[in-house]
Amino acid sequence: MRAAVISDIHANLHALTAVLADVERERPDAVWCLGDLVGYGPRPNECCRTVRARADLSLVGNHDLVVLGSVDVAEFNPEAGRAAAWTQEVLDDDSRRFLAGLQPHAVADGVELYHGSPRNAVWEYVLDAEAIQAAFSSSEAPVVLIGHSHIPIVARLADGDLNAAHAPEGTEGELEGGRMLLNPGSVGQPRDGDPRAAWLLLDLDEGRASFRRVEYEVERTQEEIREAGLPEALAERLAFGI
Ligand code: ZN
Image: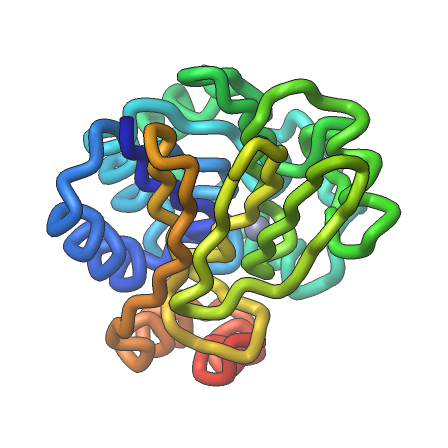
C-alpha cells in the first residue's frame, strides 16, 4: 500500500497540478488530502474539483470551515480574513457541498489523519517537541499524518525516544518498529523557505516516508492573486516559501 499525501493546497491550482503530475509518476494506490483546499489562493473551485476527482480521501481544514461559515472569521489575521471573504463570494455550490461533507480527521489503512493534530483536529499547530509528544500520546496508530502548519516534519518515537526534525526534499522517514508523525508540508503555500510545492509518498509495506518537492509556475498563481484583487502579500510570499 503506497499513499500520496497532500495538504494545504490553498486554491493554488498550478501548484496542485504540478504535484499531481509528480504523484502520477509514482502510481500510488491512494491519494489522501489533509485539508485546507481553499483560502489565500485564487482558484478555489478548480482545486475542490481536482481534489474531489483525484483524492480517495480528503479532510476539511480551518480555512475551508471559515469559508463555509462553520467557524468565525475573527480567528484570522486581516489578510487571511480578506481572502476568506473573497472565497466565500466565488465558491460555487458544488465546491461548497463537497467541503461541507468532509471531516477534519479520518482513519485509513491503519493510519490516523488530522488537519491540525490529534488533540485539536482543526486548529492546533504541531511544531515543537511538546506538541509532537502530545500528538503521539493522543493517538494510537503507528503512522499519524498532520497538516496545517505548512512545515514538512518527520518525527519518530521508538523506545520512548523522540526524534523530530524539519523534513526538506529528499528526507526519508523509517518506521523500524517505532511510530511516525508526518507533516507533508504545503502544496499551495509552503512556509519552510523552499517555494516549491510539497508532498509525501508513504509506503506502508516498507514503513517508509519520502518527502518530495515540485517546481511550479509561481508567477502564474501570483498573477491570478493580483487579478482577483487578493492581498499583494499573499502573492509575494509564494516566491519565498514563507
Ligand atoms: Zn493551511
